[in-house]
Image (cartoon, rainbow, N blue to C red; front, top):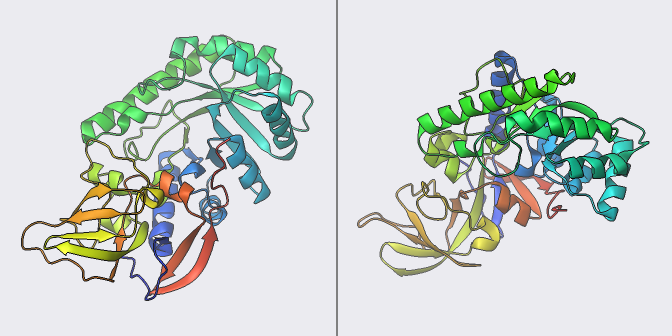
Length: 364
């Protein structure tokens, strides 16, 4: 992380290094191409039209999103191929929105129950474009998704509801581990589960042309075969969790919160004007503290309140002076972005652009 912060920043603010961002995007696009995978990155990580445009121009086939609201925002920005990688449960209002969206873009939606499929089918019946569905499979994270051998039942229910069955998808969330071997195992679990689920669809006569998985932690561990499409998200900027896990280096961190030192109450301790309302409060077992300070890699953000971050340094390590501005890389990229109105694009100590977080708060 080498964003040289401009003088006079109004802090706290999220800043982006566009050169690191573009390098991350290009690297993932090339890795996907060379491995024979289609790339459909998850836009919930950045919620920003300018970043989505960069991903698409680098070769992404479309975007993944988590909500109808995110899909609507990106459709308005001109993205015409969207996958809602989430088992939507449509009430009347959401059904109307889904139908409008299906009239505007090439839309795919995740399903994991016959009831959810029937609701979706009723909502989009007669839409201008056919709606594809992908059956969600649990490959080991035990969040949502059916057992691989049950995927055919869900696919049949979707087809009976008038939907076009495109394939299967999963999220290998159990790959979020500090242990590289655990990430390797998660990638293999993903391949096995998706392969079994795709075969369950084919046994019933469905083509299963899309077999979608992938995540940032399992990047580099994918093998050609069962999986044909990848949906990583955090890789665009990375975060302190990815750094701690070893899935990126400090040079791959493209986003940080700029924060001002508002108090130096004692040697080895200082306080920043950034808290959970900017950084988010995510913290995993393998991350030390509430963020990473590139200028002070030995520091620990030991306390986090809504508008305060207390930072501790080892004995003898000099800290910043009162009023100075430092960068804090959040533990998890997605939450800070969703809390921000805009991202400041910084190059050579100058703010060269401002990117609106267009899908901020699009949580429904």
